[in-house]
Length: 319
Image (cartoon, rainbow, N blue to C red; front, side, top):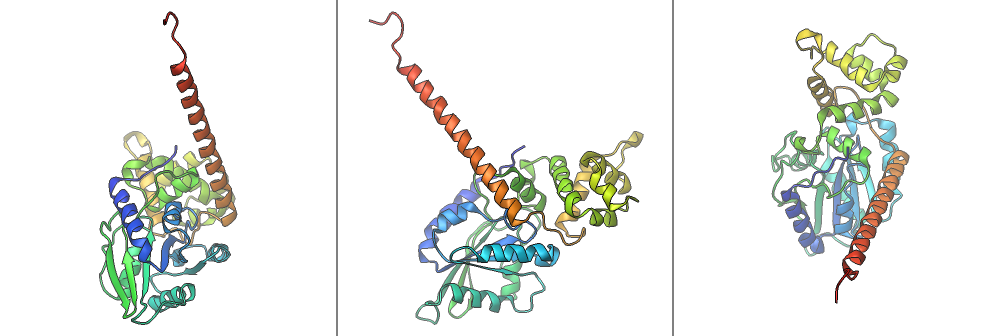
């Protein structure tokens, strides 16, 4: 199942970014450190062109520390890009971001040439919470529902440093199915756009590979981590449901309730420090997804061409 979500207000965000970008010096993209590749928006890269970009891996305190280092190195190897890892406990995040932006655009600074920065991110990535931390004020609305911020707003971080906040935005087509599942698991996708049971099962499959001990520690399944890792995902979900009391009359497990438990535990980080993807995995998924999209478009074009030729053919009996 491919997960896609691009509601109307995101079209307005796309338009606002297109109009704003000509006056911007640096783009800050806030990423979820638990899915640093899947939460990077290819549409944003298209809209902002070659503007210097600061990738902020947010929520690093709930991500796998070793994998966070891998992702920071991966992004730092890209042209005109810097990456930093942050979390809500950072003592002086504003200073770190301001300094990083000046490294990317050293020609800007002072009242004559103030730094103009656009901050973007997918929904529920923690961008609004980060902004409130940066300003020590409640500048932006926060919540665990995708799409809380709806309007662009300007925020002053320093006398010569202006930050434009934009609503969370995805992109019209998520090429890699794995990225769609990860975004849904993180809460970046509206709940009407996916099946929670399917997303929970996909999440469990990922966690079984790398984080089986965390699953056992959380749900007390009385199994060795190796046994947890080898369980069929549907059986694991049912076992979690039974342990957490998601049982209906007749002893049947309420899989919908069990799925909600697993997703809530991941989003609230009670499972432990988890990162769902490595740079190598993400590159492979993205390449496969783009190839599949290209093949789909080629077939679509071929069908259109055949239809055009059949429409142009002379009909039998025509004068």
